[in-house]
Every structure is written in structure tokens, then in C-alpha cells.
Length: 590
Image 1 (cartoon, helix red, strand yellow):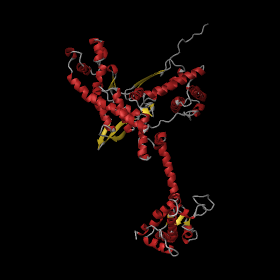
Image 2: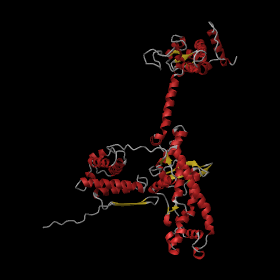
Image 3: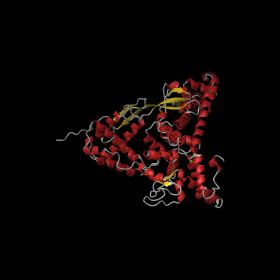
Image 4: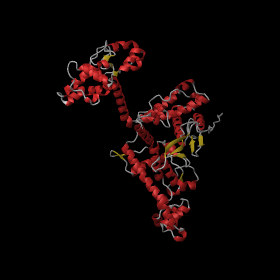
């Protein structure tokens, strides 16, 4: 007896996902012809659920990427397994083997293997949290994303100031041309036009009149059908329509310059609406924007400069003016609306369209980086803006973290190659500050000295030593020639436990030194010696040996004491011989 065979297995559904996002963008994922349909059904159901607002898949682009990762995984599993798998059948080897397969196919520097695995792990974690059903081994595997590195790809760096100036000049040139064309040349020519069916088609003004009447829909093919190809080429609607309606190139220049001047994320700029400007006040305006990755807090505002056409607010006002004609026709609230070829009116930029326009913009304007063509990637514009803010504020994080946590700002926008010099200089400055502090002696005025005698408990604050060490420092028991010493066997210039290795006048550039009024005679005598040496030593050599010490005495030590203290110390120092070379400025010019 022959066994009945089911000729066609049933389709297990959610193998075709159709999603319309809140901004009316639609996307379709069709897995009906893919293998491993039991597995894809479960993945598809969760992927569709994640497209709800705030659930993590906020755009057609993200949906398509995650769907592609699942599809490629299912195909790989089908090439290694003979049976249809369910969620409960999945084992760590199904993920790790797929990742190894991807890493063999892609170069070491590629991020693709990690991105594909991350998409799949993200969906499986959601399924595990909601429904369970995964094996214990698979749940443990989902504790980490990838078995390998993310990829050694170079981080996106900021553009150099030279390239930024080229970008600004090129964008401004396109914007100025668009403004002149759409606000002067086009309206002027349109005013001269007449109904072409009565006045004739052999006039640019009359053809423009018809383009306006048809709301931009009139095409070259329609004109050629009326008057022939030659006349249609001469008065082409494709050439004339940009006199009334902005082109993608016009708006790309505005978008690019706005990104450079505001630092807003490209994906948020692409989705700006015609009512995005809020609360103008004293040269500033708030821009309301949608950031889909900020789940639960998608709508945000940023405060930007407003007024001139070079300000971020002014650029958006220009965009509103130039797109008014298209927005009136479409009725859409999207900001970036333009006329495409053959009379199609577009209500936004896709990611691929922006990438194409960027390549065309760089090529058209001949942008170059030290003789090489610039590869214009708009994802680098935010880092370029952030790097400029970072440099202007000297790395002050409070001015730098707008729109991010401090960790994200530091990792993604401060840690880039173009800021390396700034960071290295900051490290050098910090080390220099630390060295300067280590070289600065403590100078006690008579009043502070008396305070320490009466209240040794103030020693930690004034001198950084324990109260019991005050008597040793002030009694003279720890005196060297020019100062007292906190610890002769713990010198910042030597090894702990060994005697200080520097010369006697090194005390004046040492953080261990404590200078009091009783050391003034010796310091003045040494200053006199320095000035004596100046007359008999080459200037370069003298400066190297004594220049810093002289500055310390004149600008750090002596100004802490009164004129009478200095005069008395001078008298003591002159008990054996006159001090001939003391600067008169020490004594008010007397």
C-alpha cells in the first residue's frame, strides 16, 4: 500500500512581514521561499513585534538589516542541517559556526560578521526573555554577543579644517545658486509666461508656465509628444523645472551645512519636519527632532543659533522657504521635499540617496585632501562638529556631551585620531603641572609660622606634613643651607630611602623645601652670587644653570615677605660683605 505524501508543506507564518512605521515609511520582508521556516517563523514574529514604537527596530533600514541577518543564518543552517530546527533545537554551535563562516568570507577588518551575529543575538535574547523555549546551553551562549572581535576597522575621524572649509564653501555656493534661482530667476521667468496652447511652446517662459500649472508633473515626454523631440530638448522641463522647485542637490547642500553647523545626527536631520523650529528667542531657536535609537525618549530638542543664513536656524528657514512650493503640493510635513527627474516629487532623503548625493557633491566640487579626492561620508560630520567644540572648550566635557552620556561622548567623539594632538598636549600640560608642583617650595610667612607654632594641627593643610613634624621643621634641626627639608631621604629628584642627589640650590625648586624668614639672609646672599656669576658666564650657560632659580627667588619667595623682613635679612647677609647685585625692585626702587 502506497503511503500518502503531502506534496506541499504548509507555510508557517509571519514569513512575510509588512510594517508601516509611525512616519508612514513602509517596509516588506518576504521569507516565504527561504529554508528553515519553523525557525524563521519564530524570529519573524519577534522581529515584527520589535517594530512597534520604542521596541528597538525603528526604521525600514534597521528592519531590513536584521531580516538579512536572520535570512543568511537560516540559509547557513540549512546547508549544515538536514532537519527543520525549532527554537528549542538551537545550540551554541549554530551561532558560533555561522560566525566562523562569516569571518572566513569577510576580511579581518570587516564589521559584518559581528553585526550579523549581534542582530541574531538581539532577537534571540528578546525571545528568551518573553517566552523561554531555548535550551540552557543556548541561554548561556546568549550572555555574550560574539566569539570574536568586532573588527579592526579604523574609527570614523573628524574631517580636517581644510576639508571643512572646502565643504562649507562648496555647500554655500550651491545654496546661494539655489536661492537666486528659486526666488528671483524662476519667478521672474514665470511672470513672463503665457498659456502655451495659445501662445506657443517655443518659449521657456510658456513651458515654465505649464510646469507650474501641472504642479511640476509636466515632463519632457509629454512636451515631445506635442511639439517633437528637437523642440522638447530645447525647452526641456527637466532644465526649467528647477527654476520653480528645489532639486535634491539644492537640499543636500543645506542638509550638509546644517549637519556641520549644528552637530545633529544625520539620521535625525533626514527626518526633520516643517514645524521643527520651536521657541525662537534672542538669536537662538530650538530644533525638535526624532532620535529613534533613544528608546522611550525618541523626541528631543537642541538649541542652536538662529538669524543669519549661516546659522543652523537660518539654514532650516532657508530650507522651509525653498521647499514651500513642493510641500504645498504634497501636503506632507517632511522638511526635505524636492522634485526629481521626470516630475516625481520626493518627500524625503533615504540613506542610500544621501550617500549617492555625497559622492556626486564631492566629485562635482573637486574636493581634495592633499591632492587625493575626498570620500565624503556624512557620518563623519557629527564627529567633525564635536571635535571643533572639544578644541574650542579645551576638552570641557560639560560643553561636549550634549545628546550623549559622558561615556559615549568620550568613547565615540573625543577618542578620535584628529584630537590626538590635543590629548597629548593635555597629558604633557598635566605632567608639567605636576612637575611644577613638585618643584615649588612651601614659603611660610612670619604670620603662618607663628600660627603653626601655636596650632600644629594646621600643619597638614599648610605644609602637608603631620603635626608632630612641625617642631623639627621650624626649629632648624632639618635645615639645609637655603631651606628646611621635609624629608632629605625622600627627594622628588631621587630614590626613596636615599639621600637627595641635587645641589644645594636645588632646594629652591623642590616641593620638599620649607622656606621661612630665617632663611632669607642665605637666599639673598645666594641671589647676589647668581648675579655675580652672570658677569663672568656666557648668557646661555648662565640661564640654564641659574635662570629658573632666580625667577623662583624674585617672583615666588621674596614677594611673600614684607619689605622690612627683606631689608633686615639683607643687613644680616651683609654682616661679612656687601651685597652688590641685588635688584633694586626688591625694595620698591629705593
